[in-house]
Length: 559
Image (tube, rainbow, N blue to C red; front, side, top):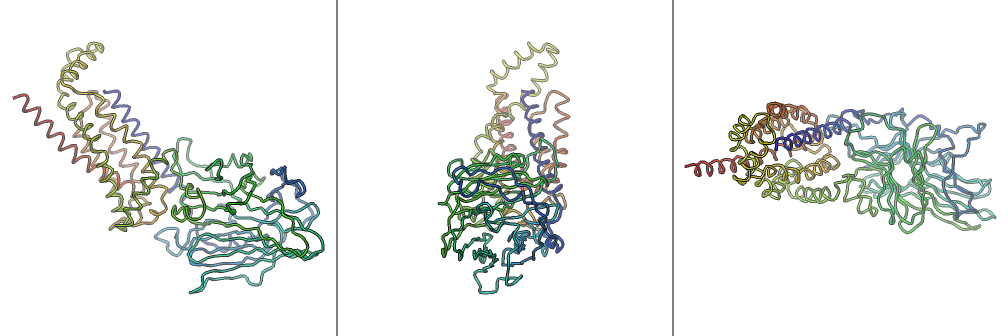
């Protein structure tokens, strides 16, 4: 029993350490402000042609796979484009006329912090510190003039703003060839949405057939290396979904090695991070080739291209699809594309975490406050595990009553561990006490606690969500450390209700745990600490009642 208790203490401490490291990684070490700066979008992009996906010529469509990058023509000058700014009620997007590339995206409903409500979260940028852009274009036959993301497009205006009463904004970028082929890159922004529709409209006014395929890709800079191998952190990298293989994650090494390389019908690709994502979403009935690669400038690409399309003289063709740039809002994502809600990454405990999220969302739809939602959910969790907890606390109470007798046996048998173990097992059998009875229920509940941690960490709804008084943001640490101190005090009270370990070293370790956890939880999101405090208080109440009941029964039996 002593060894099992020690194992549980170490497991709990290790789990707490992992959660603390995850919190440090997600909130403390990545705390560079995502502020909008004119400098970050005003610098001309100098993207090498290796970022253009090389695919077989359009006459060899059946063997289409992304190959090694083509070398850039050293004599080709870099053409600097203009910036087109598009502002809606949800997005502020900067589009470079060189390639029609999205080079900056601000999420207007998501401030960097509560203290900076006017500084909006920057999801995409050409800044070297957080390079992240969306590129697209066309690929044609060899020696055929086609516009890719290096080509300069023409525009009629450089500023668009959604006006009151207006539902959509249409932004056209136009390119024409000398032969008479016109390509219109059309972005369509909608009110209240983070999804942007994108078309490449090809009009062939030449005298010859024109062949092309469309590609769309996300390019991201190398993330800053931080933390250590033991961290439990939100996944940052590429993901893809298709009807056959479902949801697949690709870290930056996987992307660089080109591990994403397959033909699909439907599906989507994305780059995800904590709370937010950018996804390229083709029409669900059309085929695409998904690919990935690494670039020489330590950037990573995930993308998709279409089969070849032949546009006859005088004909017209449109390549269609959407780009999502916004939060991991599960309800919205589920409505946009099948499987897109899976970017809310709960890890290996998704089967537990997903129902937890649904229950939390339902409660919040009624009470309208995520702090009270967490407290109500804690009550429900305690009710669900009431019988298991009761079994555990009964066993602990009985073990506590046996503590003096256990110490007497230790004094009697000294270093004779074999006889001591036999005497203790005989005592357990006589008193009908299971030494594992207090441990197994705790082990069963542990996956649920970890799953709830991921729900609270991954749910963008808790970002900057207030509770009461001093708690203005449940996704941030308690600014005055009230909840961590209460959590540590509640752990100390719980220890007093549990049987004291006979071993002095274990007893000292147990006494140090409340202090250690108070320090760690001081940096946790206050929403998670609120859950832990509420859970501890309810556990203390239940354990106190059960302990007193067992003590009365033992006293009555002795008389």
